[in-house]
Image (cartoon, rainbow, N blue to C red; front, side):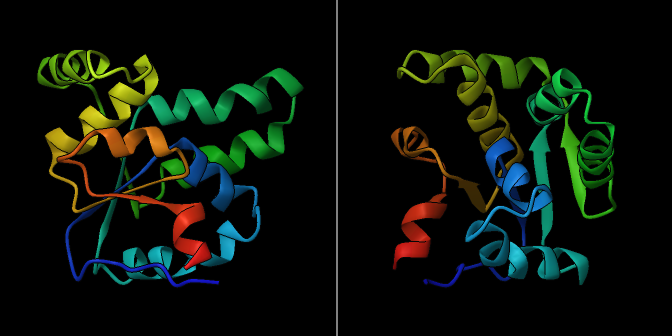
Length: 146
């Protein structure tokens, strides 16, 4: 298994699947992401994500009536290590430009948030984000395979 390469400082964007892997402890991703959570806990890095991640991660627990999992996601996304970023007008405009590249609307909003916030790393398991050339994307499955 590869090792997660982290920047020395800055904001790291995590998309919904990255949060799901961590909260639901889905391997091999959960263990692979541990250095990120440690770095955030020590203040070396900041973790950001769009408020859209709240919607995406709560949908299944709410549908299934799984209150325990719902609370785990809420606790994670409101922890001191994670900052939920709202989508301001500039973010929506950037998302529209990314939709023009062929990204789906949710992906465009995630990527736009990362770009607008100036993230130094964007963690995902979706290769579609690699189309955004200015986004410092790491695809988890590729990084693990290294």
